[in-house]
Image 1 (cartoon, rainbow, N blue to C red):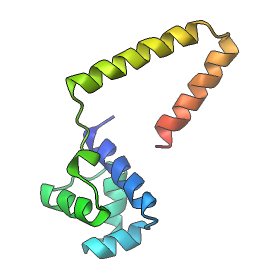
Image 2: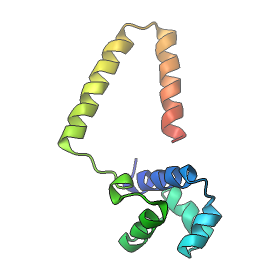
Image 3: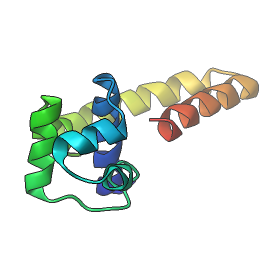
Length: 110
């Protein structure tokens, strides 16, 4: 997944957490609502200045939007993946398919 898409999904998440529509957020940041839609869909880049504006208005830090992963985060993620694979090996095929469907739902609806 591209960094633009990740940032867009995170902006969308925080916007929804504040119960804001794209139109409301656009009005507050003095941009077009289509700009917000394009950002959230990962179809448009965003300047650092505008990213800071989003953070200020949504009351979040840049680290909440930027897809930065430290070595420690990466190691923890790999450990979770290994543990999950071990658990999946003990399931029946239909159960594995159910897990796959649930994970796909989380990934594509994030």
